[in-house]
Amino acid sequence: MSFRAGQRRRNQRFLNALAWFVLVLIALPAFWIVLTAFRPNVEINSWPPVWVPQEITLDAFATMFGLNPDERMRVPVESYMRNSLLAAGISTVVAVSIGTLAGYAFARFRFRFQTAAFLGIMLSRAIPGVALSLPLFILFNQMRLVNNIFGLAAVYIAMNIPFSTWLMDGFFRQIPQDLSEAAYIDGCGYWSAFWRVELPLALPGFATAAIFAFLAAWNEFQIVSVLARSAAARTFPPGLFDFTEQFTFDWRGMAAMSAIMMVPAIIFVILVQRNLVSGMTFGATKG
Amino acid sequence: MTLQAQVQSGSSAEPEQRFTDGRISARWFPVFMLLPAILFILVILLFPLVYSLYVSFTPYELLKPNSLKFELARALRNYQRLFADAIFWKSVGNTIVFLFLSINLSYVIALGLSQLLARVTRGQGLMRTLLMVPMMFAPILVGFQFRWFFNANVGLVNNLLFSLGLMQERGQIAWLVDEPLGMFSIIVASIWMNLPVLTIILLAGTLSLPVETFEAADVDGASSWQQFRFITFPLLAPFSYIALTILSLDISRAFDIVRIMTDGGPAHRTELIWTYVTRLAIENTKFGLGSAMSWVTVVLAVAFTLYFFRQLVRSRVVR
Image 1 (cartoon, rainbow over the protein chains, first blue to last red):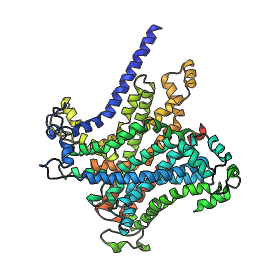
Image 2: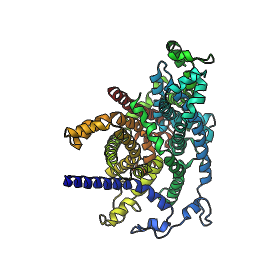
Image 3: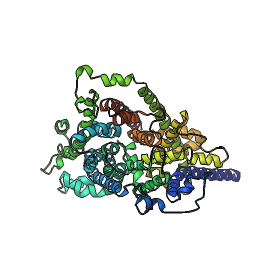
Image 4: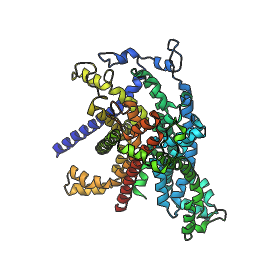
């Protein structure tokens, strides 16, 4: 018996070690990118490769924000950041609010063609940005909305509504129905039952949906790369290409900008960790 | 729209009717709640999509504004030209290979990883945080990262091979240039990007399975493989399909990766349908032809999503 117990403990230790190995392998590339942003260019491009950093420097960030007098070429980071924050911020607030209304309708009411409407909204989420960007460019060109950050935000609103609806539908279903029924009996109308009773309970879900929407807009590339023709209208993702020229690549500059781009995602992933799984898997077991 | 009429005629017997406070009725309330969402989607997503179908029947080129004109006799010209284009078929073939390998490998690795994580006894919280690290990367950043890692001269992969003594010269393996290696590099990048969401959902599913079933199987002497094959895997079906549905909504994210890693090149070796749309429409300013091509990507995306969603619904019924 004691032999089998020892065997089992050894197996468990092996499993734990294997899991650590795989996960460190998955996470390591990201740490390497961040580390690179703080290394001098000589070390990054050296041959044979230098693995252990000999020197840590903020040079890449100084160059990016124009604090390095000897660098002529400069990437307009402030403008990218302003555009990214505007487009992502506006679209998040509007899309998640609209998605909350729609999600509540799906979760609490039964109406004809409900499944069809739900499927239609979800399918509109599947339209590739590449396919959408062409007609939007033609139409926006006629309406003088190309290079306009609010035009871009409007597109992001529409793109973020389906997933917000889906998440909020799941979160509202987790709230027991008795609460709204009690509210109806106490004289609440549908709107006040939603607004005063159910919405406050669904606020954690609202926050989760907001985080997803913000990141989707923050990271979007296919639409903005077509709709923003001028540098002043660009957001971070297309701005990343400023560091590439035909044959030269400023790897460190790109790593530094990547590190900046990752800041909201890092904050959000830490915040959302717990709500994430329940939000996404709820639909798996209840229809 | 039509939804209003449907709701109106269909919900007269709804029990919620009892609680109406006179201001707004049960049949109109969901319509009112859905209206903004449907309006936004109709105006900003569906109308442009239909418009692009129209453009795809015209010879429109951006630099010739007068070419945006529909002529019945020449309506199918773009599609004829596309289907006769060898590069188009090459991009379709590349896309099939890419999606088949990327989705299947992502799923198998995520399934294995979720089973491993479910059995880990120590540090599961920290492991989950590590698992989420790729989620912090925009697809475009995933592409940039792997472009750099697979770079022949300064890339992490070649540096590592050199330091381990597996490679003699600098820049010996051109990962992003050579024929099967370019596709391989892109698939590796996409798997890395897909893993967190797939694994997290499958792990949540595994942890939600009833413990008694496994205890009973243990008593009956089922091996761990048998338990996985005949209990865990079938019971995970709804979670698998939810994960794959989420994945299929985003299959065109591959564009971001490829655009920065290889931009479809060299010589269209890694050209996918999404990068080819951009090449036709944006670089060559042939919006008519590009729109025709973009409809191929729409049909593909919708078909994938519908397929996995139907599987999801079916697996839920069985359960």
